Image (tube, rainbow over all chains, first blue to last red; front, side):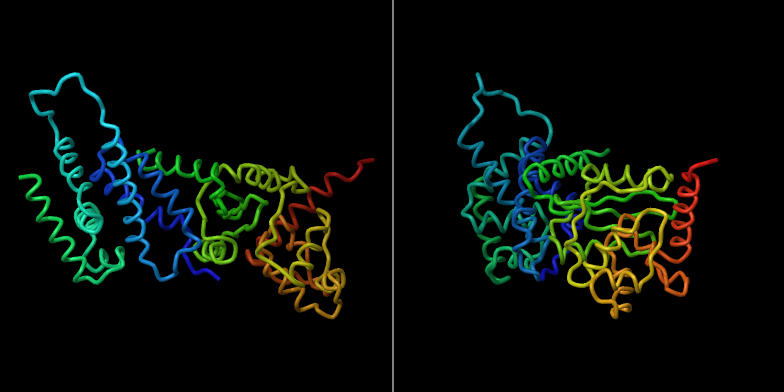
Length: 154
Length: 194
């Protein structure tokens, strides 16, 4: 017999955070679709989840995957523009986008570690749990990912 | 409604459309306080009385029916309407589909017999034991009344002691007394006048 809490509790406790993670990762417009995809995927898989799972880490990991899917789909179908604007657009989102596109291009483990650390604010131990590796390996992935990002965005 | 609430509402609708809403629950007002109502696609599965712990009820549903438990009012609109009319004395027989998943064995037999007691009438625990097929299991019949997952709708308040005493009630004896009084007064009103 399952001892998982009622799914509503996951929504009550983590929906706001998942939305914040997704806004950081894909921007305001993409976040709504990714939010729906994240919670529907979670709801589908929920009855088979191990009882001792870290529910917050699990949800954030799904959100991360949906954000990567989003960037991948957008990368494959770039929006055509007549001419490239000379002046940068105001506001932080385009700059955030550039960062997250670069994050999306990282190798999977590094990408996951960076997103979980900075978009979801998970500590190393929870990143390790979400990725199924040791905290030391999670720290290494994060370090490698950040080094690469610095080079990409410099 | 905040933007997040709107997103959650959309999620509820999509979950229902995709068959992922195994248990929907909501709260409704009654003259006795807030009731918790829960339904599956099969029918009403749980009525929580005002003095019962909501978290414990939801955890029981997650463990025994499905952990896909979501707060969602729409699937319970009909149940709410019928309960409102019942408490107004305007409805004597619930038409709701019921889901008996939370019960089984002898208890389920007793509870199904309870569901057949007509409005405004009462039976004894002994009679219920007998109707469920074991007239010596009076104590078990009492337990089955106490563990009725669908109080009010399945009218365990209509079961009394053979001595005429009230017996027990999950929602407290004042509620049991009030429900019996409500039904008695409606039944009296309906007697042919001369």
